[in-house]
Amino acid sequence: MKLKVAILAVGLAFSLATYAHADDGMVAFDKGEYETALKYWQPLADKGEAAAQYGLGLLYEGGTGVDQDAAKALDLYRKSADQGYALGQNALGHMYQIGLGVEEDPAQAVAWFRKAADQGLAKGQRNLGFMYSNGIGVEEDDAQALTWFSKAADQNDAWAQYYLGNVYLNGYGVEQDDAQAVTWYRKAAEQDNVEAQNALGLSYELGNGVSQSDEDAAIWYRKAAEQGDARSQMSIGNMYLEGRGGLPEDAAQAVEWYRKSADQGYDVAQDNLGLQYAAGNGVSKDEAQAVTLFQMAAEQGYAKSQYNLGVMYNLGLGVAQDTDQAIYWWRQAADQDLESAKEALDAAGAK
Image (cartoon, rainbow, N blue to C red; front, side, top):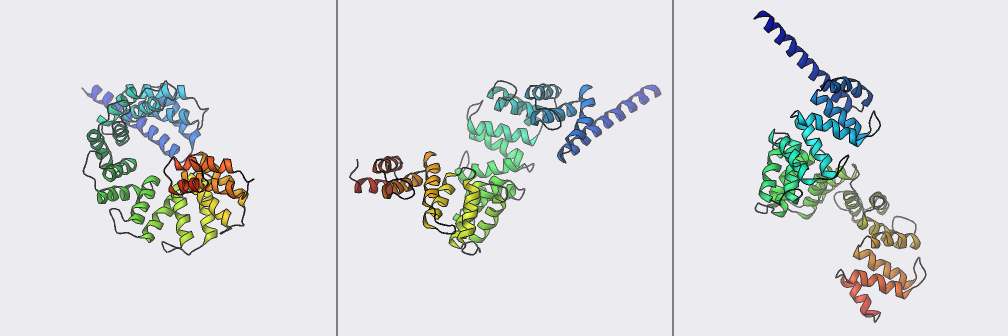
């Protein structure tokens, strides 16, 4: 009996030490100390420790501390998942979802997300909700999406909270409720979720589910903008341009924020920046640069830029005068029901 107890004690101590080292690897990983994480995880993974296999998979998936190898990451995630490790199951589901290291298979993604979700892993619950919400790998089911998003959100998963905000905003499987949407956006935004910060800023700007406040909108837009969110960068630019949200009217600042957003390819910001160049507002007047920006946005299908580009061609501003090109771009915009484009076509006698 004493021998059995001693063996049990040694086994328990070894198990606890193993998980402690695996946790040490994650601490190092989170600090960006990938070579240190590798030193913790590799020997444990070689011994079949599920948490270490998962961690090592993270390194191979991202190419951090090792050469990037999606197939190796997949193999490690599978070994971890097959032992019932929830994070490994969720990671394996993600690989199937995006087709990384394996042929894309949404149904397999759902199956692995469900295994992780059934163990109470918030990431797995959120991902399973996402699949139900979008009908990917499973029949679209707003009620199931709501259930799984709620489970994850209640565990303080920021992305689930953001998705739940969208559910209430759009009334997917629930009664539409702007105030509830704001509640969930705020929970996610306070965790620095950039999508939620932008959504909360928009809610304040429009007064949806909360008292309208340009000042509060500016606060949340700036938080998202400083994280690189193109939409919020443009919105901050708008507020500087118009002197709203407690910000001074400052066209030069507006231009800087429009540029940050436009450089990410955001068509609305490209159009706004083009307008500033065309007018010489906050920046030296440069009609050729305005044309370039309008063209970028127009080719993405943005109707206002298609109209503006048509105007530049019609008047020969920043580009050689070309009525045919003007009519072409106005038609593109008119096909999207932009009234100013329809009026321009009528004035040009074009059908």
